[in-house]
Amino acid sequence: MIALQPQASNFAVPIDRMFDAMLALCGTVSLGVFVVMFWFCIKYRRGSHADREGRETQKLGLEIAWTLIPFLLFVGMFAWSIDLWTMLRTPPAGAMPIYVVAKQWMWKVQHANGRREIDALHVPLGVPVRLIMTSEDVIHSFYVPDFRVKQDVVPGRYTALWFTATKLGNYPLLCSEYCGTDHAAMLGTVTVMSPKDYQQWLKASISLAPAQAGRRLFVQFGCSGCHDPGSGIRAPDLRGVYGTQVRLADGRRANVDDRYLHDAIMLPAGQRVAGYAPIMPAYQSRIDEEDVLALMAYIKSLKASSSSAEVGHAPH
Ligand code: HEC
Ligand SMILES: [Cu+2]
Image (tube, rainbow, N blue to C red; front, top):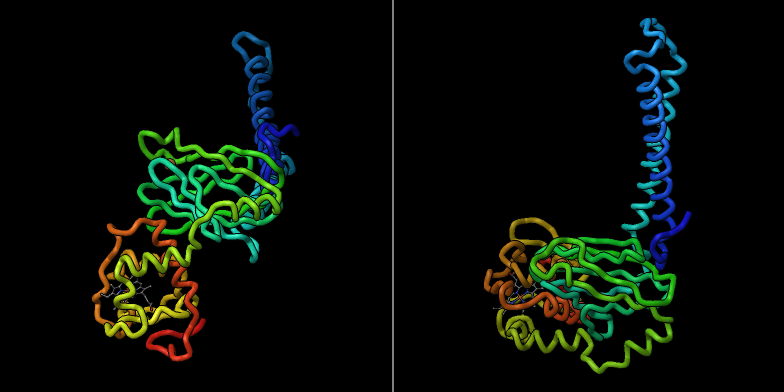
């Protein structure tokens, strides 16, 4: 079948194939219904001499056939779409992470080495990329039609999206969730480059690595005053905390992942670590999502110290 849009990611062909199949199936069924409808309209129109005797007939075979065949077809479509959905939702283990923060009305992107861009996303050809996305304000939706991918970007949580670009070139990026006055202008471009060009592009701008930028913010926002070893204030040692499990004051256990760190900084009241006084202030109105990403990068970069056999934490 003809593709109406460029097919520029690993999802384009399977999704188009599924779309075509659904169109063909639903089209065939509607066509069948309409053909029979028109035929009956004409045959039994007023004044026609068609036989109108209501004969009682039973055709068990026919009834079973028209129940079972569509049933199997539609269950087949269901199984097929579940399979495709699973693929859409499961990024391969080594996928390259890129962070995206949406806000009214722009896309802010940060690459692993700290290079930032706005309303643009550069990705290497043939490499699985995983976008980790959050919003500064309202719900947005990251949409690249030529990749056949779309994902809501929600304030207060991280949503993910993955793809492997399969064609060099520039592709439009849209916001597909109505997000205010300039929603329709919240546009960008995804540029697919060869892996070599991408590496060069990454290094071209001199910006601080996220972990370094995070350390700066860590001092600037006063986190270090409580959390640095030897600060004199009783606060958890953050070295090696990422990826462990923590016991909370209300008895729950939580995995220290991106979501956990985000909430620990923005809304600590919801998840106090067991054994500490609730002195950590909420930073929700003082730190924006990009800075949270930098702080997280810094916390993730801290290696466990040998002395941090610490309250509450266990590897998981
Ligand atoms: C006034 C002291 C203080 C300041 C300032 C402070 N924290 Fe905390 N922080 C704490 C205490 C005490 C806890 C443990 C109790 C809790 O969870 O609220 C904690 C918990 C945390 C946790 C969860 C740690 C774990 O072991 O699970 C993280 C992450 C964290 N803080 C990061 C930060 C960051 C980032 C900043 C700066 C933006 C910051 N903190 C500023 C005192 C502080
Ligand atoms: Cu938007």
